[in-house]
Image (tube, rainbow, N blue to C red; front, side, top):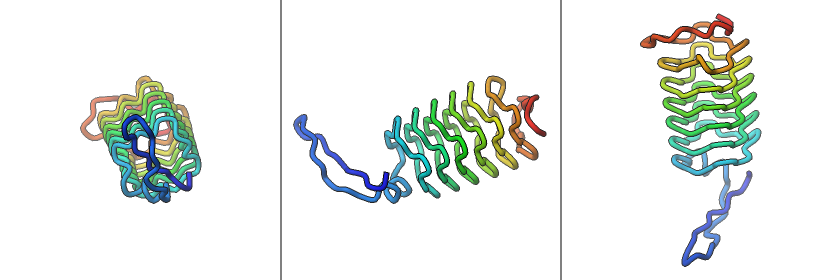
Amino acid sequence: MRCLALVVREDGLLRTVAVVDGWLLLRGHGAGTDLRGADLRGADLTGARLTGADLTGADLSGSRLESADLARATLRSSDLSGAVLRRASLFGADLTEADLRRTDLRHSDLRECTCARAAFRGADLWSAYVWDVPFDEAFTEGADIERADYRGTHLPKPANARV
C-alpha cells in the first residue's frame, strides 16, 4: 500500500478526490479509520496514530508499529506475527483471536486489552504494562513476560509463559 486513493460518495457515485502516500496518511491521520482486512504486511507505521481504528482481519505481519497509538483499536483476528510494537499503546484494544506470535511488545501498554484466544506464543512482553489483561484464554506458551508490569491487577501471570 504505497498509495492511497481518497474516494468520496456523492449521490450514490464514487469519485476519487486525491491519491496520497498511504503510509504517511496512516501515520498522521489514521485514528478511527476502517482498515478491515487491509494488507499491511511489512508496513512501516512507526508512530502511527490509529486510535480506535478497525483493523479486524488485517494482515500486519512483519510490520513496524514502534510507538504507534492503537488505543481502543479493534484488532480481532488480525495477523501481527513478527511485528514490532515496541513502546506502542494498545490500551483497551480488542485483540480477540489475534495472532501475536513472535511479536515484539517490549515496553508496550496493553492495559485493559481483550485478548481472548489471542496467540502470544514466543512474543516478547519484557517490561510491558499488562494491568487487568485476562490471559486465561490466551495462548501464551513460550511468551517472555519477564519483568512485565502486573501492578493493579488481581490476575495471575500465565502459567506456561517464561517468567
